[in-house]
Amino acid sequence: MKIKFTLLVLLVLSSNLLTAQSRATGPFFSEYIEGSTGSNKALEIFNPYPVVMDLSGCSIELYPNGASVPSQTQVLTGFLASGDVWVLANSLATDTGILNVTDQFSSVCNFNGDDALAIKCNGEYIDIIGQIGFDPGTYWGVWPPSTTLDHTLIRDSMVTAGEIMWSGAAQNQWYGFAAPEYSHLGWHTMYSTVGLDEHNESNLFRLYPNPVHGTLNVECSSSAQSTITELNIYDMTGRIVLEETLHSQLSTVNCPLSSGLYLVRVEANDMIYQQKLIVE
Ligand SMILES: [Ca+2]
Ligand SMILES: [Ca+2]
Image (tube, rainbow, N blue to C red; front, top):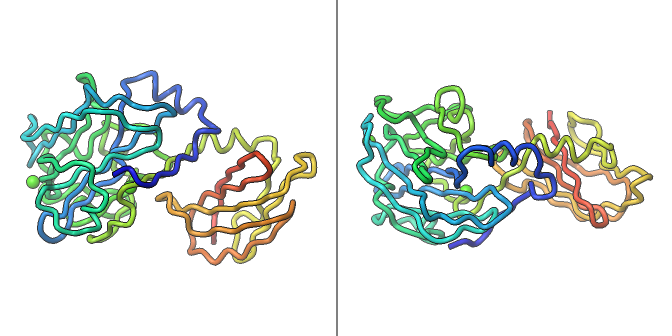
């Protein structure tokens, strides 16, 4: 059920996409759910490219308990739209938070924390959760601190391609939520830091102070002759945490957010500007 997605990177696709396309391409894991009760387990995969992706030739593999060969393989078929996700779930899942957005039931959703999962396309690994052929004991740890046991893991919105190296690489690309947490399932947001910086290098759009504590000023330069109409602030999991409708070149926005890194996206006339924001 492809119900909802946001793709913020289209206007700024540049070197990141070229880099990704120079190696094997395919979808990557955007969400992992290992429920604390029953078989409420799910995987979400995401198409990061600006074109429809043909999934034929791609499969998802489950490597249980340190196995070096998969016990379960799910061959993928069909097409996945740009920025869209495909949700696979355990056939015994009972929670409607999973069932309402499931596209396909699959036996690869039989992991329980200490297993590795891979996406392979045309014989090449595209993305791996954990380390194939190695048993971590109980779970794989991720950073910020969480684990693959009894957690929902959301892929960092800055990630633009799969990663086959786990230690020190893919393991640092996930945000963990204690199970049950299903509100991110069925959609994913991706954006590119390289693109963001490049897109705003002419300083047509300005946020200050940054870091901010309290009131944020949002301004389009007079040379841009633009009036800001919409402002959205996203957290690092891609969730919109603040929405404002504005009607001026310079606006002030009360910013009562918890400390952390965010992405601010504004629309002004026909342009979209994006910039990272630190809240103190
Ligand atoms: Ca296992
Ligand atoms: Ca998701």
